[in-house]
Structure formats: structure tokens, C-alpha cells
Length: 99
Length: 134
Image (cartoon, rainbow over all chains, first blue to last red; front, side, top):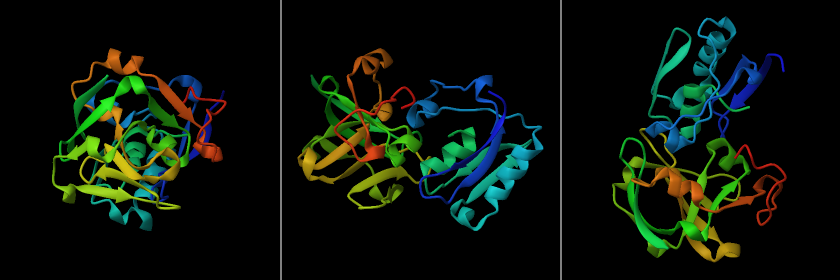
């Protein structure tokens, strides 16, 4: 499977993004305390991907993201996302997952 | 065997005790919310669930028929439990996220029977054709 661009969203639709990746490149599951709690299933995207960075930033600046009180991006990756109004917001931004 | 477990979210704002018989079965579902959350639940009766924290720290998400309260921590986002009233499963119930039960040996949890539900097609009492992703 080649790279594809996927749209992702939380359940209520406040968080929306696009991400481009190749699923065959491998997904990740982890047994750390947080990943266990949220059953995280992740797809990592290179921080150098301008598309990824731009789209995450655009998602963060849409009206739907007003509920997020803190959102920081460094090197194209989400570093902090606190006080979310939905676990899904957190997981999607944290993990760039969901297909 | 029914045992009393302590459950919590990641940051510890949500804490509860629940009487759960893992051998009686757990549930995974492909409905819209369960799939997004990859929720793995166990049903308990209301008297088998005891919240041990300030409810002010817990958000409540409802949608569609509003028959279920999908609760999650306002700080860390973890969906540690839910509750609602569904006649078909005996009325009032709580659902604990088994991934939030503390001090549970992963090998024990892995042995728990799982009932898969095809909620996506409103066919709750049957397993969907594909379950590996849940």
C-alpha cells in the first residue's frame, strides 16, 4: 500500500485533521500507563512532513478547537494537549491515529 | 469470580471501586464511540460501582439517544467508565473500562472472554464480521 491521505476526527467532530502516511510502514501499540488507558494505536509521521505539520496546525486553529486550553507544537509533533473536552481529541493529536 | 477492583484514569482525578467478574465476559464494540475510543468494557450493576472522587473532575459526553453517559477525565482525557439505562441489558448499568482497572495482571485480563458487538450496524447482540481492529 502506498502513502494515502486520511481524514481523522474525534467523535463529536470538534477535532479534525488530515494526515498522510503508509499503513504498511507499521503501526504501534504500547503498554505504558497512558497508552494502556486509552488503548492507543498509533501511526507516527515524520516531523519533517510539512503537510502533517500544516494540517495539525490548521486543525488547532479552527473554531472547533476553542475548547482546547493548551496546544503546543514543536518540530511538527503535538507535545501538549491538556484539558481536552474529549479523550479522542487528545488521542488523535497525540498519536495521529485513526483511519 | 467477582472481585473488587480499584479503577482510575491516568492522572488519578477519577477513582472508583467496582465489583467485576471478568470471567463473566467483557465487551468490545464497533459502534462509533467505542471504535474511536477502542473501549474495552465490563458491565456492572449500579450497586457494584462506587465512585471515590469528586464528580466535578469528570466530563460527560452524550450523543444521539443520550441513553449512555460516556464519562471521561477533564484533565487527562481517559474514559474510565460510563453509565446509562438500556432495557435490553437489564436497565440501569455501569460500564468500567477494564484498561483502567489498577493492579490487574495483563495476563489475567488477556484471558477474559470478550463479547463483540456489531453496534455500527445497530446489531448489538451479534458479533461483526471483523473484530481484529477492536
